[in-house]
Image 1 (tube, one colour):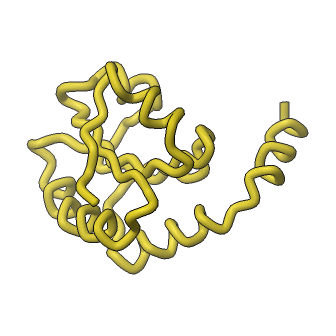
Image 2 (cartoon, rainbow, N blue to C red; image 1 turned 45 degrees about the vertical axis):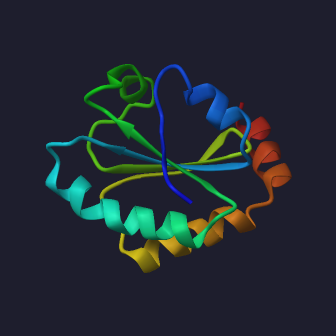
Length: 119
């Protein structure tokens, strides 16, 4: 599956209408971002039930600010509209797949219960 470009116009709709969205925050001038791009694309092709999306932080500064993106690349996983993973830095293909597998296995009822306890 190809990646989706997220903008301020489609961001909420993509997050709200998909169970899992993996977001790569990047910029065209960022060498580590460009190096990570093929790994991200490969993972997108190997996980067809997941939406893989990219936010160009140069063009979509508001989104980057909203999520406190301070360094790129940053990878964020939304599951059922909840951020379940956020990490700056590029991952290897194996590490990315490991994180995806962990996110898929999460019991979201337990996550929501834990969040309710903390608030």
